[in-house]
Length: 90
Image 1: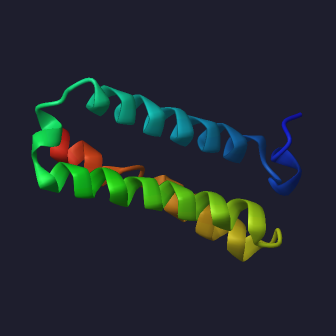
Image 2 (image 1 turned 30 degrees about the horizontal axis):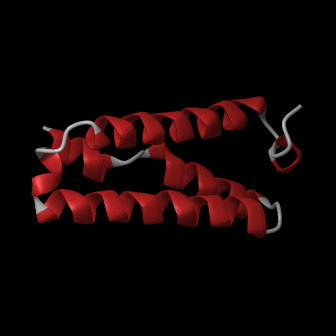
């Protein structure tokens, strides 16, 4: 069992958590490999917002006591992953 799964009552939530992190890093590194996207200030702001989004979500995940409301809030935050970057790539 993984170190964070003791706070998760459901194995599906762990899978969703892992998928969200993998998705974030794949999109982030894809953007790093495409420097023309970073010529726009909007793209830089978007990446910064997404990094803050993931950091805040991880903070909620590991530092709030486990409860149904914090689990729901965490699931809600990761249910719409990184729409800002996806919008900029198009």
